Image (cartoon, rainbow over all chains, first blue to last red; front, side):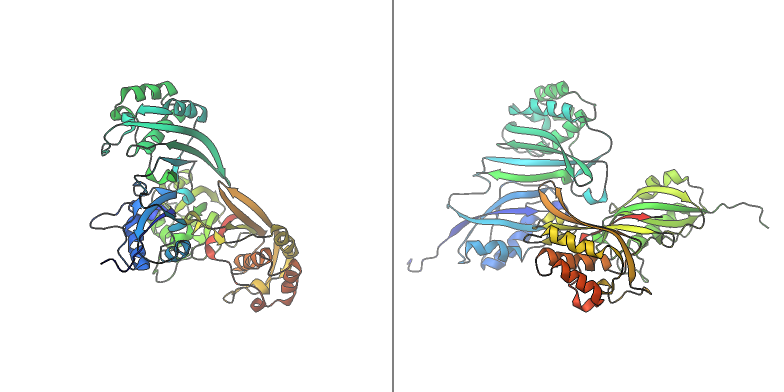
Length: 255
Length: 255
C-alpha cells in the first residue's frame, strides 16, 4: 500500500502584521471581512498546492498588531523551508510579512506548545495622524512612577478576574505575570509610553484591561494601592475600561 | 447700500496629514479619488456656512505626508478663530489634523507668501509592515558619510535641472537649497535615515529626485564627485530614479 513516501513536515513561521486593516487574526466562518488567518490560508494553499490550516499562537483582536506572532502548519509540499519567507511573503499583502520559517518536530503546535508571551502596549502622549492606528493617544501627562508602582503589584501569580473580559472562556482566572514595565519611549519627535508585559498566559483582553487601569493611575484617578485593592476584589465591574486595540502589539512567543 | 458690515477674515491653518490614503493634496476636477483639499473644502464649507476655497502652501503628491502644511482661506463666518482647530478637526477624517489656526492680514496667501520650506525624507534600513506607507524601505547598508558629502555639494543656489521632473512647469530650474543633512534616526527598534532639506523653493519632485540620487551614493553606485558632475550636466536623464512618495514629509513652511 504505502509504496510512495509522502513526507509531511511541520513548519513554524514568525510573522509581523499591521492589524489595522484586518478584522482580527482568527478566521471567521463565513469570512465577511479579511482576517490575518483567512488571507494567509488562502495564499498558503496556493503556494503549497494543498489546503493549508494555520494554527496561531493565540488570537488577536481586530486592530491589534504583531511584531512576532508565531503560526504553524503541516505540509506535504516539497518547497524548501528557506524559500518560504520570500515565496509566501510575495503572495501576501504588504500588511503581513514572514520574518522566518523553520521546520519543527511533528508534535509542535503554535498554540498548545507556547510557554509564554510578551506584549507591548504603546501610548502616544498627545496626538498625531501618524499614530492613529498604532498607539492610544492620551492627552495630558502620565505619572510613570505611579504606573510602575501599580504594575509591580500585578507581577506574580494572581487571580486576574478584575481584568478578565466578559467573553473570556478560560477555565481559571489565575495567570502568572513574569514582568510588567512602564517606560518612556522617544520615537523621533514623538513621546510615547511603552507598557511591556511577559507572562505564561493572559486572559482574554487582560493586557488591554490592565493598560486601561494603569493609565487611570498615571492620570491620578487611582493610586497604586487602589490597584492592589482591585486585584483583591476580583470584580471586573470595579476596574476601569479596556484600552483600545490599536495600541497593542504581540511581540514574542516563547516555546 | 452697505448698511450691514460683513467682516471678512483671512485665516491661516497649520495642518498635519497622513497622505497614504489620499490622492494628493490638490483638488482634482472632477474629484475621482479623495484629495486633502477636496475633503477639507467640503467640511469647511459646512462649518462656515459658505463655500470655502483653501489655498495650500504647495502641492504634495499622492502618498506624501505633512507634519506642517500651511493653508489659508477667507471667511465671513463669525466662528472664533480659536474654536476652529477643534470644530473643524472633528469634521475631518482621522488622517487630517488641524494643529493651529491664526488670523492673518488680508494679503497673506499660503502659497504666494511662502518664503521657504523644510522637507524630510525617511528611509527605513530593512523592512517592516509598520513603515510601508511611511518610509522608503531600503535593504543593506547606506554610507551616510558619502551621502552627506554629496548633499553638501548641492547646498546653495544652483540650476537643478538634473533633479527636475518632466512635468515641472516652473519658469526657471534655479533654486536655492539652504540646508541638506543626512542623519541616522533611531525610532524604537527601527533604524532610519532622515534626509532633511530647507530651501526657498523646490522644483516639482526635486526633493524625491535628490533622495533617489543620494541613496545611490549611500549604496556605493555613485561617488559624491559624481553628484557634483550631475549638477553641472543639468540633464535629468543622467540622474537616478525618483524616490517613492511615501517617505516624504512636508515639515514646515516659512513666511
